Image 1 (cartoon, rainbow, N blue to C red):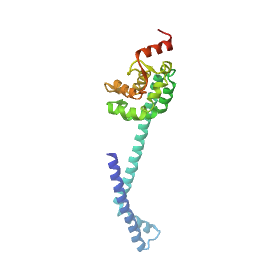
Image 2: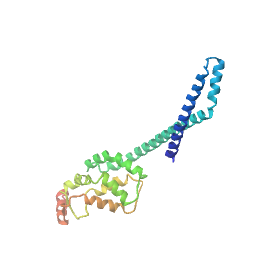
Image 3: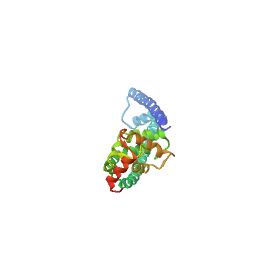
Image 4: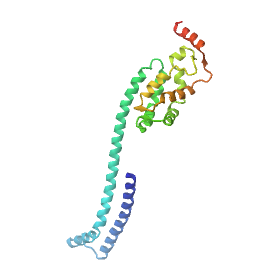
Length: 228
């Protein structure tokens, strides 16, 4: 609606400015024919001619001032929105930082990469009012920010390295719960079932030829931890 009013004001301002210019030129052409003198009477005659178009000139000036007033108002509103967004990001960043600290020691690559991408992630989530309300919205966010690097998150985890990348079952992961813990902390709210949807997306990024088996896993666990 504001854009519509801006366009209307601009159009009418241009039209009135053209008419005002024509009127201004016309006044001076008429006065030039009278050999206008720079004396008291000449000045009175000049202003008398100008005031014949005072409504036109006044309307033109009013519209131009209204346009610049709207521009200043729009600028002020944008500045206020930017401040609100900046303050929100500062709070959000503090929250995600606390959550990343929980996994920092066992997955430094995740912390590094998440720190790199989180401002862009924040912008997308902020546009959605800090919520993900459907699987479609989740897929858009996940594809844009995480799909290409999720496998790196998984395989750089200390437990994955220590276990030689051996999985107990096809649904097992070494880092998903930590990843989800940080990710869900980025949101104010999420739809029911998002945990399962994002885990399925996460699992699809893992190595399709990874070693899977309970006995293999148990043997790797014993070697890794010394616990039988």
